Amino acid sequence: MVKTKKSKLDIPYRIFWQQLLPDLRHESSTLQSQLRAAIIGAIFNGSLRPFVQLPSSRSLATILRVSRNTVLLTLEQLVLDGYLIAKPRSGYFVAARENTTPGLDLQSAKNVSQHALDWSGRVLNRLSTSKWLYKAPDWQQYRYPFVYGQFDPKAFPVAEWRECNRLSLSTGHIRKWASDAVEQDDDMLVEQLIRRVLPQRGIAAKPEQILLTVGAQQALFLVAEALVSPSMSIGFEDPGYMDARNIFLYKQARIVPLDINDQWMKVEMRLADCHYLYCTPSHQCPSGVTMSTDRRHQLLEMATLYDQVIIEDDYDAETQYQGLPLPALKAMDRNNRVIYIGSISKVISPALRIGYIVADEKLIDVLRYLRRLMIRHPATNNQRTLALYIAQGHYDKLIIRTQQALSTKAQCLSKALKKHLSGVEFQNPNGGSVVWARLPEGVDGRQLAVAALAKSVLIELGDPFFYHDDQDGHYIRFGFSSIELDRIETGISILASFV
Image (tube, rainbow, N blue to C red; front, top):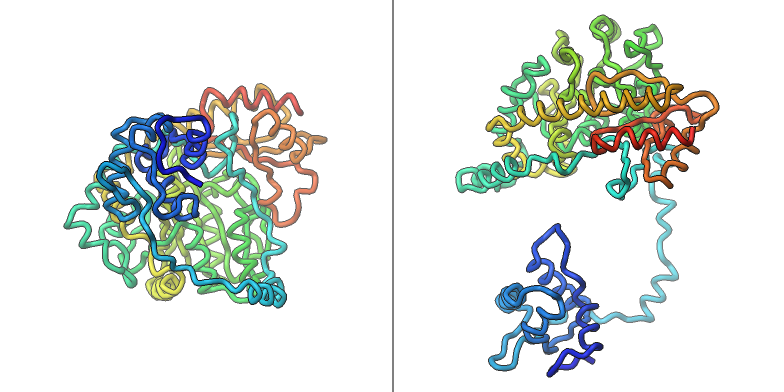
């Protein structure tokens, strides 16, 4: 039972409150917000019952090793919000709360459990054979994280993003984004895409040809949902982006694996039987190969000849740091056969989740309807903040900084691989943030990855990218966007000790 009065802080009393309200030293939020969350959590989980008295503000500050002002401000706000009651000359008490949880008949619950539904017989089992790339959720705890798709938190444009977020909260901008926008996207962001982003890829588009999505991933799912039916054949890069492949397999499409070489892949007759072709021509996933101009023309000619549609995933197009980037396939398309999918959040932060589709307006109408059924629309406040971020010129500057940082890291990684892992085959990247490498004969990438973990080196296996198994574990992917520059060579040298 919690004591309601205490003249001095004996050890059991101190331990009780320290356990109830743990150490408030996290960097993710203020001390006030952490203390508030801890007290409210203790109230709702029953640790602090109604009418229980809290320690005095001075005692609580001593127990938690924070200032008394921090405690007082938190307690006073909890009184205003109805969680606590302040009694003059007595202190703070937990307020009585109406019990909204209905009584539970334990016997009835026991009877229900005997007839519980087995969901395994109802769930569609289309994903059971899918291959996925495992990403360690604690990747930031590794000293040498050679992983793709993550970013260096220190590189996030905090000041610029905060300023644009503040601007989006002005009355004029709130009127634009605060309502339910089912049928349209943020007009300012669409305009910025048309004027500032798409022209860099050589693409001219009208507003009715653009749909915003929750990242490129949702864009792929919407396209597959609208166009792909069972047994349709999809020409697909091999190795290739496994999440896109899994989406098509979920739609029960037939995958036609297309081998990748140094110019992307051969445009051959077996492509003629495909209904659709999925490709990542800017920087092929996962090899980083850029599709040559000749191959692009050949692909577009074949699509026209055999009445096909190309789904272009413009993967890592913004991060070209060697030479000039080639125009997107969509920019070269004269017969309206390319569906273009892009992401504007990869450079800023993958957590932003803003992608887009550029396609024929009739298809966009259907995709907009499907998006409404799924999520109605992406978060409009993020759309407006991003629009302001682009309009203020911050996005262009961030791309330049990102290209410079990735170029330096790419050179460092290439040198380290040549110095410490001379038997590894790879191409120096001209853009993007990965190196696709083939290990020497006799070296199993799976065993290498396991051994490296013990030394805090994190690498990604190549097997999930292949339609069929990479049975010998020959391939690995080195991502270098998140690892610190001065740790790249050390990480590779540690890896080399296992080869």
